[in-house]
Length: 495
Image 1: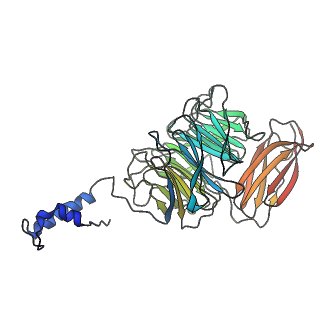
Image 2 (image 1 turned 90 degrees about the vertical axis):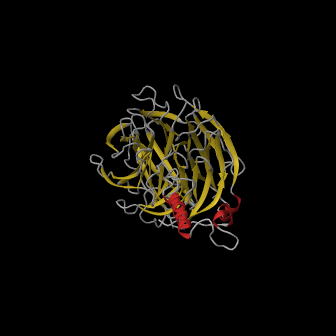
Image 3 (image 1 turned 60 degrees about the horizontal axis):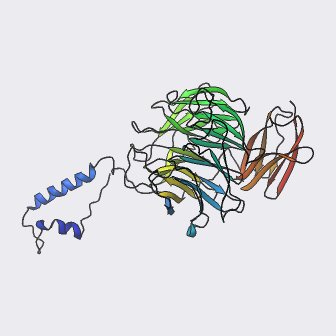
């Protein structure tokens, strides 16, 4: 490692006993002066974990830092939102509520509204349609529902949603028109009250419908794709990730599990395109948790592939990971924001980083909590001490979530399968360019009875599950609207 010691006028003044006005050494011989220099250099070299791995930033630059809600309970998670008019927003978890920050104009990044909440050091959120859903660990915090359609002027508080025995949550995930709330007391009556409960938004995003729960073990966080939920049990049982079938939203069922060895403490996970590999994060301080890569192509025989730590750093803790195409965007506490090429899962390669906590690299839970990449390519991150960071990387990253090989050449809505179905079916669609996509379900009278998708999607091919368990048998129609494209198909629910 290379260190540079700079001797400025202040240093010379503080050590003036070494030098007289003519520059000659009087009170020390030259050899003794260099002994002093050696000890100063040694202090820099061996000053411990706090400084040895501060490498500066690479391929990532700061656009703005907003620290407008400092508090002893610190900042927490964040998420992103792209409105139908193309404006982009950061949604930042603060100790006393949630900040909504317009990050569209690099020269004018500013907070547009703030939704108060019960004080908590843990606040998470996800977005579906033009609604934000916010949870926290504060007792009686429930699920806050915020309407975002009035941005950039303001946001509108809709309600706090609860159900009997439920009042607080640790984390939240979203897959299509379904929310998965985890931890807290979301699953009272199950073996563990801090499992996962599924909330159905298909009828009305402002009035979630409680569906089934999975509470075999405590759930710290989860990730859901194609009716399969990957559950981070963190410490219960020690270090296990459980795979759960959620195709029947009323009765989730366990498929398999594995222990996230070595040093198993899985806090968060994310799936690579194609869902043959999964990344997991162990949130431990001693030994420090690492990012791990697992091959999940055979859920009966999940195999370890590789682990990863930041360039030149071995003493910081990994926290959250999000995947965009062939890149993993990682919140790595005191090591900051890290961008890793995972096109070769067995050999993750770091390509960019930005250190929001430059004072130290160590095994504490300070620094970056959450990360998100917006469709424009802007990266947003939440630092526990200093708030929101808006960043730009010089690495060309396609902001897709799952799975795309080559961009389709045209818009297409495919026939659902199975059809007829009971009660779940899969709807696939393709879009050749980034678009706001909605898929709505109608009965034979033309009344909307379901909302399957309503969000911005990058160019690609997608599939979404629809559970019609609450509907009566009969003929239904589903319609996609994307850009100027509209198409309708018929499906049959046969109970």
